[in-house]
Length: 260
Image (cartoon, rainbow, N blue to C red; front, side):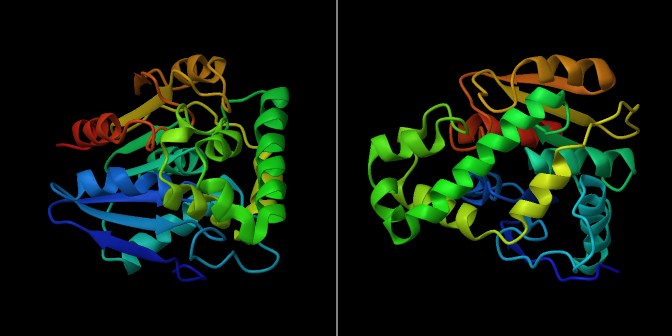
């Protein structure tokens, strides 16, 4: 049983599909709207992000620990080995769940952990700077989010077309980044995380945006070498968090990857 109660929401009807969220909560919204026509989408916030409390004091939020927490949560949510998808940190968690055989299938969008040392320092350092900026903005976040230029400056590393985000989504993303209580500990832990290769016993899809400026292209090539049994997909015109760039493309991918 999990030591904390993860917060989740459900939308739609049909076979269950779990969406793992952290800093990308706002980006998932338009994809969930599309998926809900065919699936019951169960969106869960990782510990320390969104509305979920952080892990208990003294517990390091490694990717493996987060995956174990989600796997334990499945039973409390009435789910048995559900197909699961995540982006970035959530993508790495989805892959670790697939490694453990805890899911029926897994889709990882731009997962972390395929980086080398400099790549990890670059991505995690960029996120730390973004967090500092979001905290400094405070109540002025809405003003930045209301401007196409402001959205571009705030999210250029995460989205290929950040100016197309709605002001409400951008404001919510900035506020979520500023307040996430698990951000610092999870970022520190992620510095040493490296995905190791495995042969999936369930269908696994790894997808990378062709315009990802946070986890760079060499990491997609490394994913193909470490996971030769997985399906590898290029998301044309998408950035690191591709859901807001092309919700239709992401929804179609998830439906095809988690059918049967």
